[in-house]
Image (cartoon, rainbow, N blue to C red; front, side):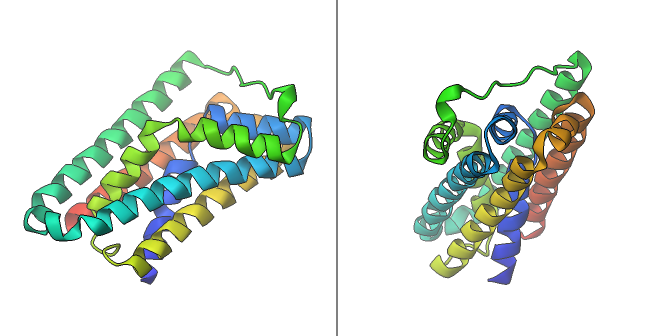
Length: 208
């Protein structure tokens, strides 16, 4: 079970680390309003990641008996999807770095309270289909989330990893925000995320 929790932590950081529009929004809210508002937005992102991980884990648990005969090929497919996501993230990171896209997403005035910030950022994060694809491929590629207890630990790991990273962004303030959301910060975080996802793909293959 501890393996499932650690796997969830790695998966959570893999999807949370890239600094994109949502991370910039979280940072902007914290800088322009208060840490409470930024923290609410950060927890909204973690909630969305946890929900997607739960859907993938529970779906994987329910389908365990059906997919058992073809577990080997599915593991290869899952690894291929994860490698594709890693390559896509790497390409997007490098393209953005070359174009030196330094524009930021403004924090709207309507998100000046923790409740509004949480609801708005949760909705925005749930609109990202790549997240559920990432977790679905990851769960199908693992063998230690086959029971409900391990699945719960996996989801908890995802949530804690996502929450800790997003809260770090929210608490960083404007100084850290400028460092992470600049061209060099985006390049470094994007490379780290792609490396983590690729490592998860290799781990899925080795489990076979």
